[in-house]
Length: 507
Image (cartoon, rainbow, N blue to C red):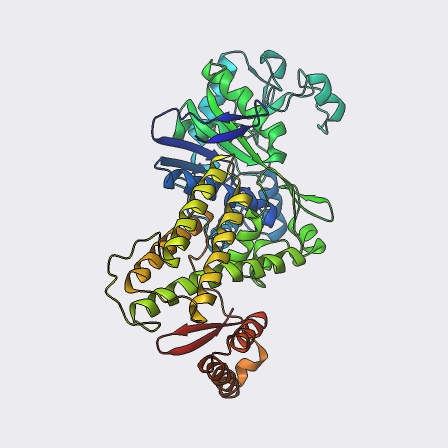
């Protein structure tokens, strides 16, 4: 049973898919007027995990994420740079994909764009005009009439008077009500425009997501999501115009899921931040962060806090996540190493106990613990996609793996061949968790340092250090051997014990 916190009801609800065995998701994408920042990245990482979880739970997932490639910000950025709006959009869409690939965000099934969905947008605007929910002004502007829409404000739980009190709306005396929003904007000199029944122009902000979600997912679909800053006015207006056009107040998205803000010093990072403002506050563009830290570390940080809670983002938190990731990665390396050594008979020659019961051996106990933690992992994910708790279960298993490995190396465990197969099952459990969280899918990047100019010296020094560690291991001085390994790891050097001897590489 999967429970989801629905912004519409403000309660956790049991998820019931519209189609048995299928899940349909629409996530509001970026407006590509600049490079994506960490605030942009959080919803896409969150929805990527949700999507992975549903797929692992046996659902066929239909995932749509748009690009708002026609927008005031894009037009301004193009004018400032002396290029076309399309060049600005294409450049930043390419940057978006590069950044998301580094964060292991899998591609959506469809990436519709405003510029490629214009006929559907125009048709939807016309439907709203024909049904009396929208009106056309002299000059070709078209507005949605909020007073004509029953229960307008039901998602954000605001009344029109509340909206007026806290609104930052431009004064336009032509509108029937100050909160009426643009569906179509008449063309201005030098701006992109398309032919329509009301003259040349381009869409308002909200209409495009309604048109694209309805086109690719139908009049009813399961999930609609994005950042909390989109609840009002964007998602509120999507609901209003979509249900009015369809003629059914129960149509459109059934579950509304919104992630919390990312903050630094309690300042919100939302879609309204400009790139230069973000850079002035710290390394907040995804590219800036990835220049200093691996993408999987950043991804882990974004998922260590429940998606609905605010997340404070700073360099100290990233460093903590890097250390946390290192411990998780070490357990994975240990599993491979243990299975190889057990199968190779390095610890003890095989015995006649071929049918050693899984519950009797220490490896069997580790596997049972792994199965228990895997069940807990899925319970956490089933409770409103609680990645924070799910990762805690993965970390607990990493600790159990570390303890087993330490006792194995110290000679406290005498495994038989079957234990190698059991350890491989533990590895499968561990990787199943990692697959949902979305880590261990790329090699850890190697940072270039000053000593790269002296590779022979570095290699010679590392050989001396590893030889000393091997001497300690041969003398069964495990404390010293582990101390050397841990000190190297703290310095950014990863040591792996293989059948061919110790190998090292930089984190």
